[in-house]
Length: 154
Image (cartoon, rainbow, N blue to C red):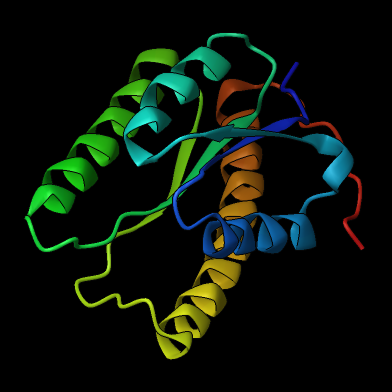
């Protein structure tokens, strides 16, 4: 049977902004159905996603992080490694792995940018919840497994 539980992993860097994605996710999926985990940064997301996917407890795993340009080009490598790693985890485990990992080119520690990205993460969290629900329904149809009824978040 398809699980009705979701794992949400969030990176600790810029946690106040990344947490907004979890708030958006809560708007569309009941918090009682979500287990939340925190890792230090984005680079740790794929391993944690793999560990959680392999438990067989989750209909989907969501990974959220903000990877900013610190001026040394490291962010490009981290962002690529994270996205590649998350994709590989999904393909290897056959559990949907959804990314709410953003890499802005022009993030500055200003109130203006923090507000913009906080709002963006809130919306991306909502989108991730909708994607998790839709992929679960599609997989249930394709795999011939009934989808458990989701509890309403609101």
